[in-house]
Image (tube, rainbow, N blue to C red; front, side, top):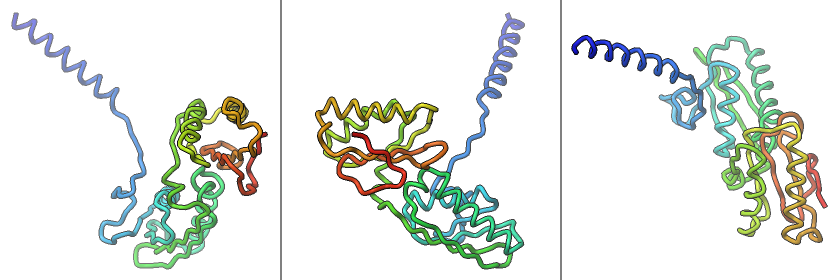
Length: 225
């Protein structure tokens, strides 16, 4: 009986060891007050140690609709490299990220060498209000759009911005079909066309904006009758 118990205990240990190995995963999240991105001794000052950190810092600031901020950039020792890195990061934010393309008008950055780091001063101008950014809805795919648009109409809203987790090859056509069907079902075919804007406007779309009224002209908008 004692031998049987020992064998069972050994099997249990092996099973737990195997399960723990399977459950071990690495996760990376961008949190507004994560110690990885904020300087502990300087309130309101972000930190960055590489290019990706700079991009993450900018996304944090945009999510909070921050207009000016300071970033301490470590591991850089050359003024020209810092300038090139900042230009590349701000360009990526505005042209390749959905929230940057949706919300930001322009970003300016200047740097000053300090002992052990560069102090980066950022200025961000927005084309969307803080309320618009906070109102962005998250959806795993475009399949959720009809229900979200129905709810927006029921609530009397004139615009809806949805961040999409997955964008497929034919999803733009599906979005336009869903909007056309909804307008027909709601008897809205004789009303002004909706404006659908995709962000970023080219490549992998990550955010879709619907303006369900008479919209301003948008360079990357597609009007549906």
